[in-house]
Structure formats: C-alpha cells, structure tokens
Length: 63
Image (cartoon, rainbow, N blue to C red; front, side):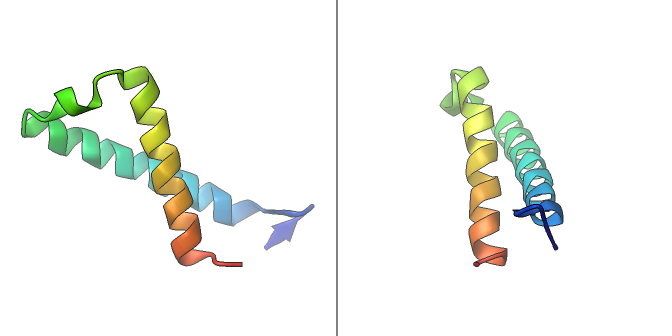
C-alpha cells in the first residue's frame, strides 16, 4: 500500500526483519566467541541492521 508516496507497511516490515536479523547475528556471535568481529558496536550494529533491512527490501519488494 502506498501512503503519501511511502510504502508504509513494506518499510516497517523490512525494518523489523533487519532488527530481528541483527539480534540473531548478535546471539550467534556471542555464543561462538566471534563478537570481537563487531568491535565498534555503536557503529556496526546500526549499519548491519540497515544492510539487512535494505537487502530485504531489494529481495521482496523490487519496484
């Protein structure tokens, strides 16, 4: 659905998938002692979340 030029439910769904994807990555890396790969956490976590969200958008909503 397009609401004032923005695909409202689409970007909201992609954002939620991005957040859930980052939580899963965090859990996996914490259990495997690989968390040191994400050293500046305050920068890396939002970037990876945005990457997952944008990839989800490109894969499921190609307009």
